[in-house]
Image (cartoon, helix red, strand yellow):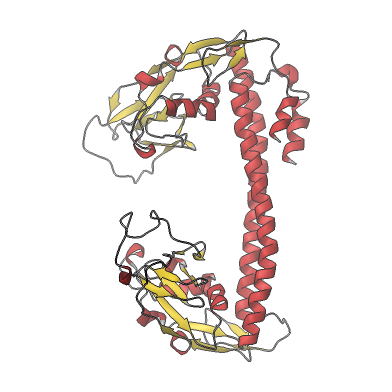
Length: 441
């Protein structure tokens, strides 16, 4: 897809911009410092006088009306409609954009008033990945999270600036083409969501109704679960699992339990460790887990952080470990308890005054209800889910690859247009639509 950019015409003659991030620019473009085309707006105002705005990678967005106001007086910077605002600490996130209204932003932001440069062109130029990288390069700091770029550094950046009429043509071209790409991305994201929904329905039906659509059903007697196959049981977890409390051992990997991926099979990174980056040397503080165990995060069970253990290891003392008996296959249990209605069951039985203080303790977990088919059916259900899920996951991965390529193409298209690597005036418009259409089909 990126290679197809070569089909878009280029300018007849180029000159050296004198800076690495721009390279060669069209011969008739001006190579000028950013400070000649933007004036920094430094006026301080109150957030009670001018509505607070947020600077994000998606642009400049209004804060909620309910957001708390301060009493600090002139504690923010004034923003006028059409100003370009960039977060001085945004590192490579590209937190910036053109404001579509008057307002105020926090003092860490740089507010730029365009001078003789088209507003929408400036949006594409200053949000292009090449400019974002240059903005980051000229900054200073110890690590990425503490990196800062000041206007005094930023104003010296050399930009390639075409005539105003050409800026408008480039902005118009990019408006149309990025809208097409965004629409194609939205369609593929919807297809991805439908595939994920299909997978969830597949799992939910299999673990609560089985694989035979003609099997006789009976009322489970529990409203939130409804009917189950007549020969299946519906039992409390205390009849299926026993709590395992064994100390960890040196040399075993520290595993995590995730909302998204259940129990990991590899060592948890230090960043994932709930105790932060400080390692606990005493391995007896951790809980031993064996393949086939069930582990869940007491603090995140209400969100679905539960799963089957696949490798011998250790987990945080904030996790509960349980061993199933011969009536329960742990991988079947994982699929069931990661379904929405079973996550809701864990949520209802978690203790705490707010969501992020909730805990699901063993005493409550062992009272929860589980649908229990015969063990041979559990095995067949797990095999069916894994086979069908693999097919769906492949389709999702393909869609995601296409989404990534479209986003990469969009970024490269913008970058190429605002740095003069491709020519996008009206005279090439007749050939461009077919090219873009072929890429987003």
